[in-house]
Image (tube, rainbow, N blue to C red; front, top):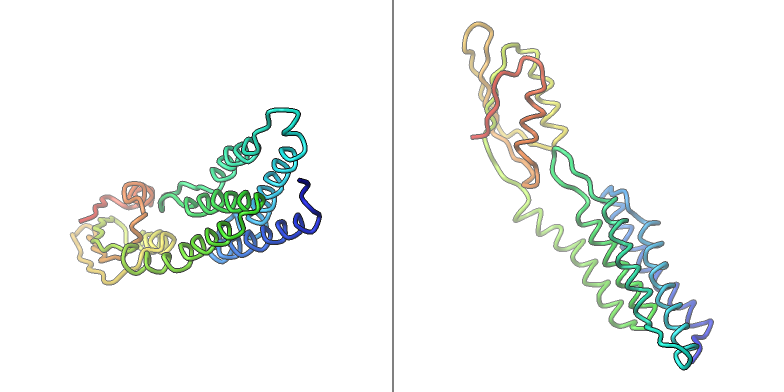
Length: 219
């Protein structure tokens, strides 16, 4: 059985549509792998499935052909693309959701290429629900934590740079208490809200690089 031209076009357009909408969500979240990347992953995976099915339909009487072999190699190769979307910074590890989304988009593209439209569209709905709805739930219930940041400096001029570091790491200052220890030494306590993914040990190391910072501790 040869796959018809119209069926191929339908599969590719559906893969393009699904990959594009998934990529738009990542684009809005300011991720490197966005609109075009997800389209290429989805359409490319779909092409691989179509090719595997066509080869199987045409040559299964003459050779032992496994229609799942080509798509399996795609899923292995997607790991390298996903790894490129993951970044480790002082603010934590970013890009894991995008990497998982790329992998899921490839799976959906493969599914559509095999002609499993209901499975592919249903899986895509679950993926988009995870990216949109569960993202908001995560922000409400799990994302932020509170702590007290204690800093000792021996020059008040270090304070603006400390503020800049806090702002860059998206740490919200709820309150601040500052007292003089004499000899131009200042003890400052920040009551802050921070993202739970923030690596406090690495952030402390960044603060210690600031001139005139003598001591840092999270209480």
